[in-house]
Image 1 (spheres, rainbow, N blue to C red):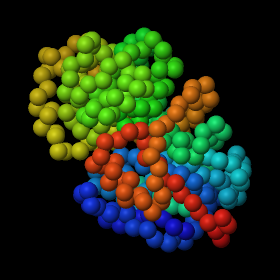
Image 2 (tube, rainbow, N blue to C red):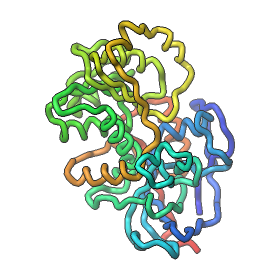
Image 3 (cartoon, rainbow, N blue to C red):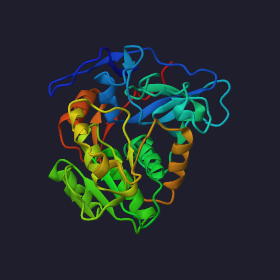
Length: 343
């Protein structure tokens, strides 16, 4: 099969080509696994963290990609729930211990980091971590929902806000633009305030129904009950805390943070920015229950991901664009395997 593999950790530049197109043996499912003929795979910022070594794969080379949509084309001997021909999705969680806190378990293994992911024509996954996709969603529109959407859903729940309270979003890429749409429909009385570096992203947020949008280092006209940070940077953390109401909660939705602006934390003032029972909570991975609940909720919520598509062979272009260019929505690889099933 064709696959784009990461062979070494490296610092990305605008001319980087971190992945190489290769032919790999066709994977075979284990007893409790299914094999997917991959149709689409979203491109997530966590792939940048893997490539640059902030959360590196434990072994190299590795097939990245964890926002996968595919069709089951082979099942293991112990599979009972899924059938050949069924369209399913796979997210960041490839497998874990199955408990309600499996995202925190030492058994947690990530798709595209600890096990080969979706930047390939085929992949395998335990059947309990593959999820039926609502029929109204196309492959490319469903792909970002498997991580950007589902992890945004978990982050939203961790804020603890109720309809009518004020929510902030820092950064407005793949995850935040899906959270905004979800909140607009499920919490129609909640005002949403968006912080983004570039004017294009801020206008995009307003077009989708944000109540306010401003630069990262801005004061909102009112204090916010909760803020979800979706950026790889530290400066948004400082400014988010300054915009929280007393008792408010900042939820950091990021696997890793980059180090280039870490000195911004020295600007935190305890009395002004942290006192009055303001909270910081991180999002650690995701559970299969989050993904299943989110996909069920989408049967009653009209989420329309904005996507830019690339072919599998253009994965390097997608990654460099994600790193260095303004992001409008999500990026998705369209994967076209051969019409016949592999051996």
